Image 1 (tube, rainbow, N blue to C red):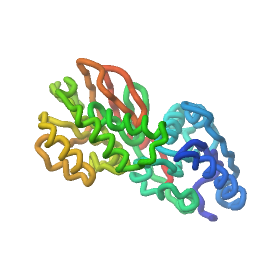
Image 2: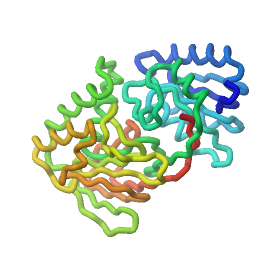
Image 3: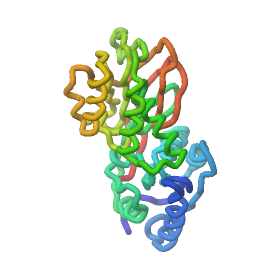
Length: 307
């Protein structure tokens, strides 16, 4: 481990992640880091006690080389927002130990999922990439922002995880999707402005803004999204399909084949502004976001990420 990139390290763990496996993961982390002195140049393990804790912990990591986030996309989202509070020159690099049911950022990075030991082995042999993050109304996101039915589905999966559903990953997303899509009606009227273009009126059923290709436990919503290209990928509907067609598109999104449909458009942007006639379902990395006006930007090369 002479070439481990970790340096002085803070590990932030959500002990409740993955039905309590986060606590076991934190215990393994202490054992691993304590047993292999060459893995770091000093470390601390801190456990979150509730929502928002990881933001403050990461924002306080001044003078460290690395902050590791152990848990699902929720704790990673908080750690990213904490790191982004720091000046770029003082911002530690990020590593993740994915332990959750969605793990979409782990897919983007090519990290081992739900195996703490193998994830550590990958990190200590890893290399550092400079990756972008998105920002919406001052909140940063490392993977996904969405509005409309897809956001309602994502929020339903979050609620069901909190209620300790036995389903995970794609199965969880599919069953939530069938429930939400069966209620589909007219969509959410929206005026969108992309980069320097003029306004476009949409009736939003699907509107996803992605750093990486997937969300919902592996659905390839923006299949060609590259977290290092300095752009955000967007997928949105330009027509209002009948419910059977909409449900078929939902199924095709598992493999990214929905991108061939004339009902949806995929594009890359640096900036967008969205104005909704009424508050839509909205999620940012799985967390609810309220409002009717949304200002969206990309911050290129915002994070140095070990993977």
